[in-house]
Image 1 (tube, rainbow, N blue to C red):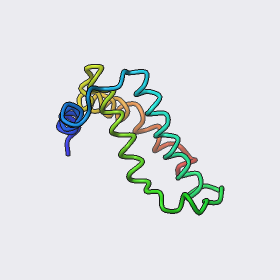
Image 2 (image 1 turned 120 degrees about the vertical axis):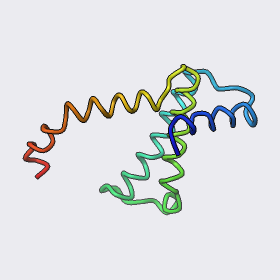
Image 3 (image 1 turned 45 degrees about the vertical axis):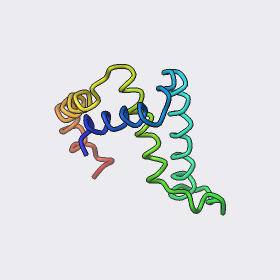
Length: 108
């Protein structure tokens, strides 16, 4: 699964099953909501909060996929080639952070 092909797949889904993209502000609010759902699962399942019975069947993978879907929608509707942007960011982080992380005593 490449990012570019996944962006195209999301766009095709919107064109086929949706009426149109929600506007950017609505999608930003939707993204915030989905990230909150991921945070709730992680805080309760892996953090120090106890997990409520109603949360035990929540699927973290499904919630992360919801986040990805909305991110891809935002990229599509704002004309971002997310694969190119990601490749550029990874290159920048590799150059900037390689030695920094290896020399970080907290990570040893």
